[in-house]
Length: 253
Image (cartoon, rainbow, N blue to C red; front, top):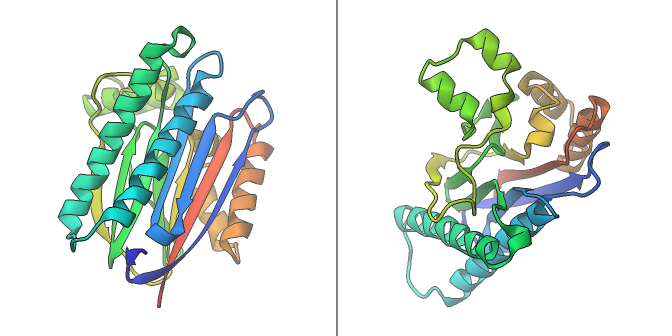
């Protein structure tokens, strides 16, 4: 049973792209619990696939057990803390697996999560997979990439011209599983009728600009149509990476 006061509909789609030989993106939709997640794995010898899949498996089990066993009335701040704890536990599990097998050493994954509660959304992320809000026809990026390029820009080490060409954009400063501990970004935001939340991997955002994403969503008549159109545009621009999109729409009951 969901804590959300909204009726939630969702659509998820993942594509291998035109260059990669395997898909290391994974997404999770637990609509009954109002929980959604997306991961983009990294690491050699298919370890990225393992990291992302294990992150989603661990999250799914944690969320489902929580909703089944919960006997008290939770408030949004307690649920926010629970969401953070889930991400920290996922990090510990993936890190443990990376230490356990030599082939998985150093593996990791990005992670985005959405948890709907009453008239609010708790969203979290680690890495450079993104969460957007599409409201009243306009697209807003809710998360900031945990990348070396963003860190350097924040510290004013490099100018904007170099940033556009920088190879540092795909060097992550935070990821699930690569360190003993992780500092997850957790936020709470109000939800309104007809809001659409888009989670996506960098296979989309490296190929398709925010302006193009906004235009595609404006022209889409359903979440499914929008998902397919975004994947098609990313592949049309070269399909250099796996591309995954997960969209959730909130409507008044």
